[in-house]
Image (cartoon, rainbow, N blue to C red; front, top):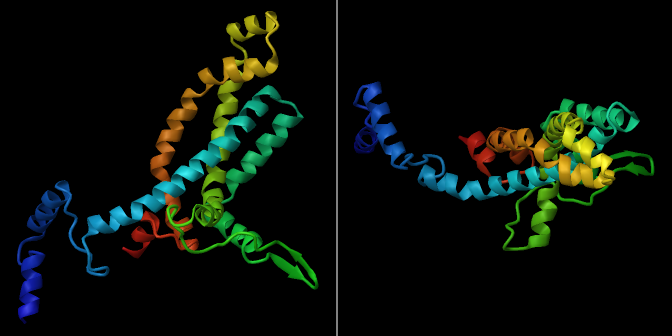
Length: 239
């Protein structure tokens, strides 16, 4: 009975619901999110401990997505309405059509579990680990080996979206008068694409990049669970 009374007082269970909510909200504004009954520590500490893992995963995914999307988008715009553009755009559409959790399972199967075996033939490998998190400070090489597959699973759809956005803007930019002038002066196609057309074509991409960085937490929810990464996604799932 004494413990029950303590809990009632701790959580203000003898107060009306709206009063309890206002009390919680006033604490939350000051950074006090309460104490986790499951983990036995303050919720703010749980989030603070999990955040670095999620931030690392999102950073790697975004860097990987841009590394793929920018060259592919520039190439597709340069080859607009030709075979190279059609192939690249088809691959991007296919990447957008694959949910990241499905891609994660496929990556685990073919790059961590040995793939599909038929007789003596194996279609796949066990090159990369598919579980556990290794902090960067503990072992940088193992850290990146454990983060490669989840980063790819999270990045592929982002890369496809970024590529389509950049391609569309680049096609419009390549039709501008200053591009025609540069061509008339004999500037090489490579310099036109990378030095003159890319920067004015990147504004929409940068805007979408910023918005997607925040929404990646939702995608990380399942990815972190599949790869047993102790990040915000896992914390949300546990909660």
